[in-house]
Length: 431
Image (cartoon, rainbow, N blue to C red):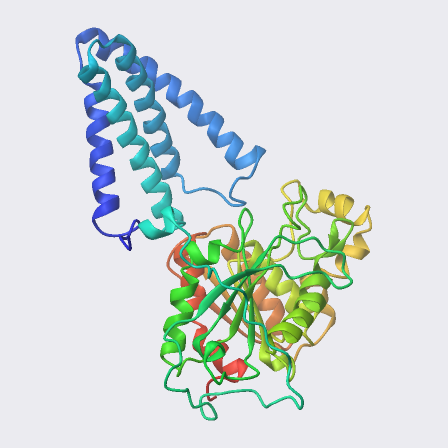
């Protein structure tokens, strides 16, 4: 089931079969070529224009411009489905009716493959059909020891012979403890060293944030996080951060809280107070100080990671902003955000907006990496703006440009390429 869906033979085969299906659906007598095909093309063009308007202006389905070639693929798919329906309705006999159904299905498969290749949402067949990343057992909780042991690292840790070779992922509810924030279940990755007997104690913590639209599971399907962290742990005697992936949607609220404390909820307090307290009390990790804590995320989650790092440097002095925006946004613009989330009080927004805070303060103890996609025309310039502002505010910050657009091609690599840097910042690895 580990068949790749975004590289290799599968996307090539899907494209070829889809193209052959379109050609077959176009083929026919003179009347079909001169009347039916042009009518199908005009209909497909009209539907594609409607799709473009809905995706780019009405609903902002991806919070970024979609690759333009996907609209060409969409046009061809709508065009082919129109022809397939007509052939089905005018055909007689089981075989003649089955062929246009098969052709239409192959064209839709080619469209799905093109979209999936563009964004990398399902890199393998197993990621598409299953969720192989959650454990059926209970979360192995741990009470913080007294006195607090020193942070574990490669030098001090000796793995026991029967340590598991891989980590485990658990679905847990992290309750609010004062913020009032409602949350869907979070996902928690525990590395082999945590699961060993005796276990490594006082591991560092990486809080990993998802995008919008999205959910914690995206890091494990598209981002293949279990394998990513297991590979890191295998290279470091089973050591890796405890990774906590919380829900950022406020349990599916109509207005996501944007990692702010606002009229839409106190998600900033939840992520900076409630979640760390729960991790310390239940996983006995990140117990020593803030140097054991980092926050990272992509797109919406990248924006949130910057917000948390700037608003709560005493909690998250280390951050990884992968293709985030320069500030929290909503589709209707800053004015609509201030009205909806702050009752029209622009100063209340500015008090939490990272770029405003970076202009006013100094952050000499904070460090971060801003990752952008070379082809991401919307988010890459904002990443440059964030880098410039963070550097001017005294942060130890880097800007990295990777091949790709606003997709998992950049988001996954943005994490994988910087795990060693995170490991050094969090104290697992030597400097």
